[in-house]
Length: 409
Image 1 (tube, rainbow, N blue to C red):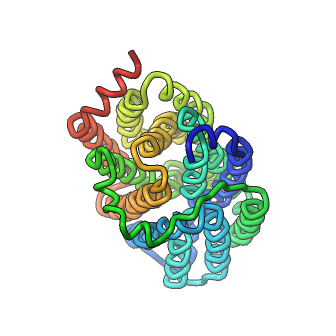
Image 2 (image 1 turned 60 degrees about the vertical axis):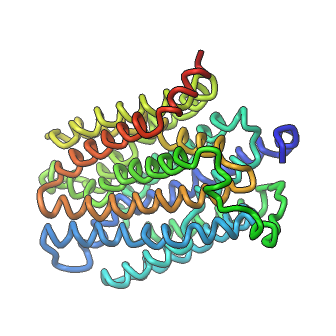
């Protein structure tokens, strides 16, 4: 489908519907994520090291499974359409969340997280659908706008989840999340329209491998690695953020509410910055946005390891949202612009796999570092990792910077 056909298609309506669906999905996911470690602590008498390790493992296992199965779902999406994958993901994750609500020990919770990993992928499939239906001249702004949906939900989710956990219980929050995901499944099935041309499996067999079809495979690989590293930075914090806040508050006060607010703060700046950075990248060059946001991320992650107050941590977490607003959408925009149209879902599924690997490694090593050293070591290690990724982009893909600089001029 060329840009003229995309312009006439329902891409604007899809963007509006999927913005709301990713908003609800983001809210559903984030209602429970910041409190999963506290949920684990209710299932046994664990030492600090054991709790950090179990929290990291339970976070990580879902993403390990997602990394394995995502390419399979991506190939299926190229044959059946992305809309089917949206319904599949929302129903499957809703079922897994219901299982988590019924868990009474860490092994059962681990199994439920494995089920979640098998069906994960709603937001990446929404991104792939929008990318495949939107005219390329609007892709940066569209993807930048779409990401504010999930981020907005992520913003509200921890706050709502924290209030519900304080008023009722963490377990009740799982049941509510299941209901929200059922709403997402219905909206995706009834309201999303996809102009999908089925890919013939026989013709796919006769095509060369995906890497050989790419104009610059090295750039794609570097972008996929960048997705993994950025997600490692984000996920390394999740297993320990509520425990870190509990320590900063000396175990006193409404810890779940404060943890929910702190977890939500990056979403505020992300909502404001993502569309603007997307439009700036469309006009002036996505490479410029990418490099600038990497540098900014290093500068805001490092001091989080030395902060001594909840308020200071909150300010720095607010600034993290600005870097995320430029990193993920820009990487996705560059992937969209540098791959064949009929391979969009496949590339986005690989991107999801690398993102899931980042979530797995980040959560696992975040929990491990916190257990071995302390919570502040996680933030310092994250800053160092993002700096290494920045150098990889600068020296491993200099053509990206040059091409985008020419566009800016």
